[in-house]
Amino acid sequence: MKASPSEYNCVAGVDDHFLCAICLSLVKDPVKCGGACESLFCRSCIDSWCKSKNLCPKKCEGEKDFKMISLVKFEKNTLNSLKFKCDKCGSTYTFEQKSCR
Image (cartoon, rainbow, N blue to C red; front, side, top):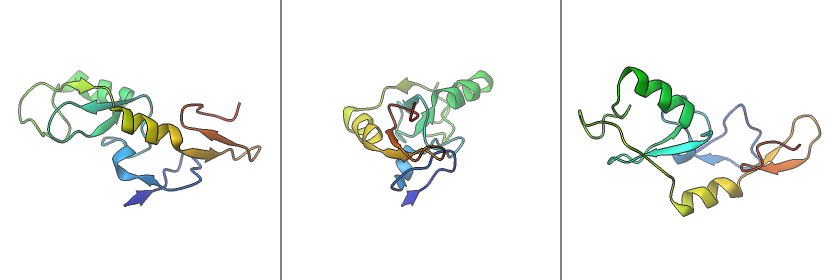
């Protein structure tokens, strides 16, 4: 399934795997659950979540402490290949660039 997060003007749809499992937007500064679900999270979302409970939001590991891991190369490459269109100037930019400026 594809989604189009509202805060980004993505030229093509974004696969649900790249949406934060907490805020449901395209991940920002992404990290991944080291447990069975392998969900992606915005670093700020999961940091806030872990302040109150250090468990995976999807409870994939039951009561075990949440463990963050880096994205694998394929995930990083897929995110970095996304193209976005600036609402102000119309130019395109990549996920890695974060803006047209």
